[in-house]
Length: 543
Image (cartoon, rainbow, N blue to C red; front, side, top):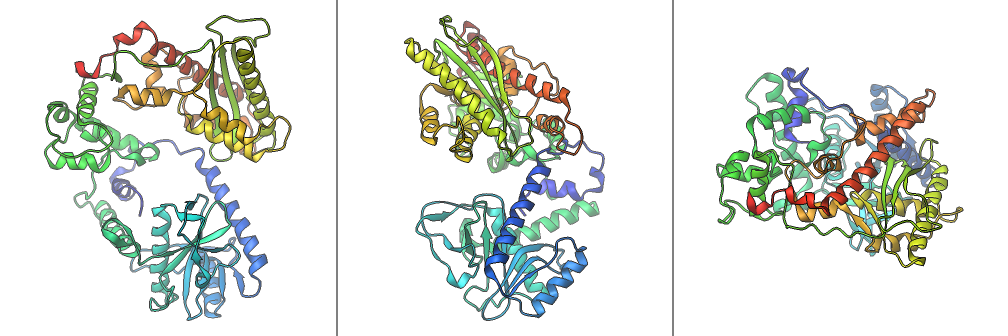
């Protein structure tokens, strides 16, 4: 229900067999395993606290037997059914299961799902009950939490609601909570309850109405694809494309057509098509100073035209300003962190340089890595992180004690900041682990510089803003032709023997070289941006 319509088409199109597809996401299996473990922990906790009336459907049973076991528990009026598998709704074409079914006092069941992502933010107003009291009748407005928007959770609850009605197991909509559903999130401390008839969608459409509309649409798209009817969904680049297995197929189609979504994504590309601006060429031909044909938020219209013109000329970047302001320092460190999905950060790589000259007692220039080869998550992360933080603190202190300026650089600080804070939190109290306040102070310091933010502010990027896209413009190239985030996940699995084999030492060396190249790319990029060579990059206004 949340997938791109074109992906639904390709998933059901017999003619798409053999079309180019991306390699599987190597961290997907780990995320699935983590989600299973999370659900199991929640189930064990609930079973121990809820007490009488708790029925568990064994996950190891074959599908039909799980359905039968669920049906028996429902027929017996069990207050709670864990691991429920619902009868397939063959007429509508639905299948699915809920981590938990909760019986209402007036009869019938509502679904509760367990997910491994955050479902609330600081605020107020979310309807919650304590985790160990999963009964919607006890829900109250939480003064400390507000609901975080998670459309996939709401649509899954609506899907289960429809399946419960088809099976004859649903609570009556006349009951107070008859069309409610609950979600237990990553923190697993509360159940957040949602009224599926409330208006959470554009136009105040209820979740159930939104689900019904999407379901009918996706079924129509899939049916057309399977039967050879004219396609109801054509390719258009959106955010989801980055991780879609069908992206190589769609990209080839979009490139041949020079589709405008290569510059302007999503619904805004559709709006441009509706007014006859369907290609990059058509967008590039518009007057950047004229009134935009449609409202496209996010970038000034003149920038969109400049991006289209840059793409037409094969340019990766163009400058917004004559000189790009990048802070430099007497002591500079480039930092790159490697993590394995959500499991943990296993490497912190640094590249130290002293543009102002080395002094006695300074750490030597060059690259070094602080790494653990125990499969993450592992407490050995604490050791490698502590060693990294101790080294970084020593370099900063040496610069400060000699009156020299210091700067540390990364490319897209979101990942580094997340694991800096997470490591300080998870391993608090262990040797060498800094207080969270100390990490927060470092992150907030102006000497911690995100070059991704610099690129985003001062350049227009026609081919994307990733380091692998931008650094080659500055003259940098990775030694490994397969260097990339997803490939590094595969290498890591082999490097630590995650799949049961002997740890591959060559893959460890490969990961170290990959990380070393990443920090070197960051250094080359910032030095290029502050060198006379930057003047060779065209200005947007010159296009």
